Image 1 (cartoon, rainbow, N blue to C red):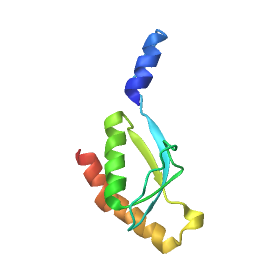
Image 2 (cartoon, rainbow, N blue to C red):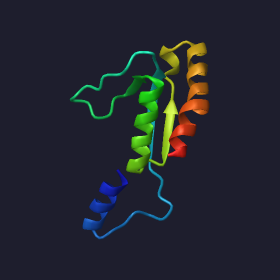
Image 3 (cartoon, rainbow, N blue to C red):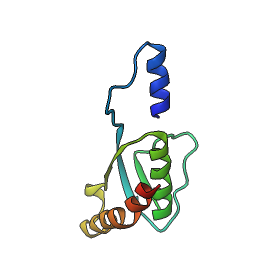
Image 4 (cartoon, rainbow, N blue to C red):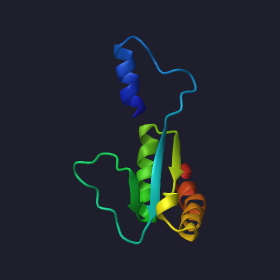
Length: 101
């Protein structure tokens, strides 16, 4: 992500601003069933995937330069108890693995 942006800006004679952070809002729901990525969709509007798949995808995004994922559960469509459980899993299981590299 950042590499491509840096390359394209370089072609225009510009560079990334100092302290540039790349962020993206990602809706997610943790499931027991694996998510099968549709071949025509590069960035789905909501990840519905296992803990491992979400962890792996966030690691890949981090390696590509995404500094600040904005992770949100789909509040309206998911029961509150499920939302709280997913947020706890995100904070306690997923993000420590992503941040550890």
